[in-house]
Image (cartoon, rainbow, N blue to C red; front, side, top):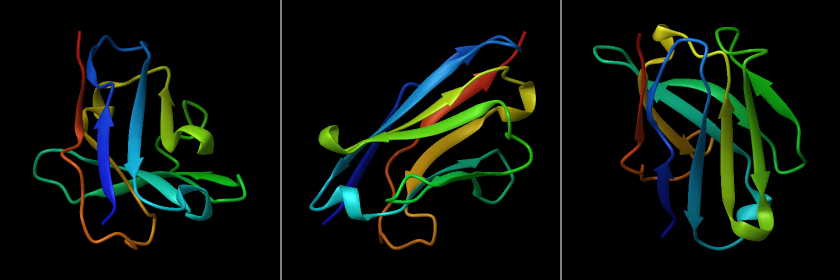
Length: 115
């Protein structure tokens, strides 16, 4: 029943910034832990940032200090602020429960970092 729609990706230069959004369609968004994943070509999907329903955050070492996850429960929306982008951040980014609670995935949003 949960649907997830990611947006906000695009082309950025190294050192640039993007803000991704994840629209959650379903009941009780506020009670769920949420996370951002990314998948680069030829690689497995990787969890890069999480936020619990209580607001606690965690980040993969590769993005720590550069990315910030946040949520607006009133808008059923999850965000990922991406600063100081690097070419290795290039991937399709997805939102979902950090432990795979939701059975379906959105289409993702492409982030390309290139000079």
